[in-house]
Amino acid sequence: MADCIFCKIAAGEIPSTKVYEDDLCLAFRDLNPQAPTHILVIPKDHIQSVDEIDASNEAVVGHIFSVIAKVAKDEGLDKGYRVVSNIGEQGQQTVPHLHFHIIGGRDMTWPPG
Ligand code: DGP
Image 1 (spheres, protein in one colour):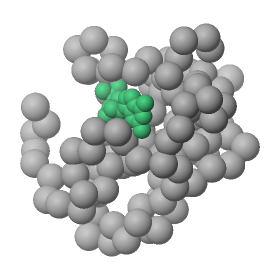
Image 2: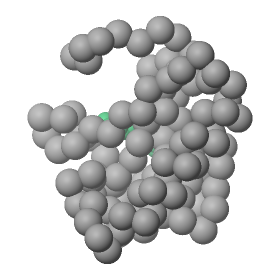
Image 3: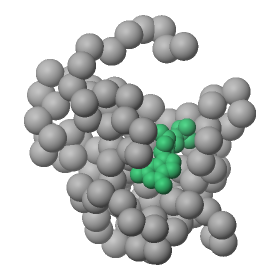
Image 4: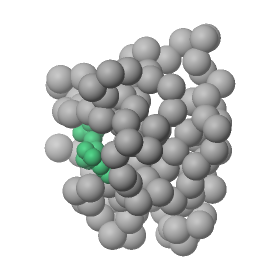
C-alpha cells in the first residue's frame, strides 16, 4: 500500500534490521525498543490490524505465530516473553499495518498501561 511504512520495509525500500524473512512475513528490530529484545513481525501483504483478520488472510497469521515462536527461540527468550498487537486509536496503534511485537529480555508488568 502506498505510503505505508511497513509495506516499504517489507519491500526493502526502507532499511531495517531483519532477523527473519520468508515469502509471507518479515521480522525486524523495533526502532524504539521497549526491552532488551523488541522485534516486530509483519505480513508482507498489507493488512491494517488484527481487526481485519478474516478467513481470507488467517493462514498468514497462523504462519506468523509459528515464526514468532522460532524467532523467540533464536533470540534465547527461554524465560518467557510477550506478544502484543496494538489495534486502532484506543489500542495505541501508530503504524496501520498488522504487526506483532515480540518483547522480552526483562520481567514484564501486568496489567499493561
Ligand atoms: P504500534 O505503536 O503498535 O503501532 O507499533 C509501531 C512500532 O513500530 C513502534 O514500536 C515503533 C516501530 N517503528 C515505527 N517506524 C519504524 C521504522 O521505520 N523502523 C522500525 N524498525 N520500527 C519502526
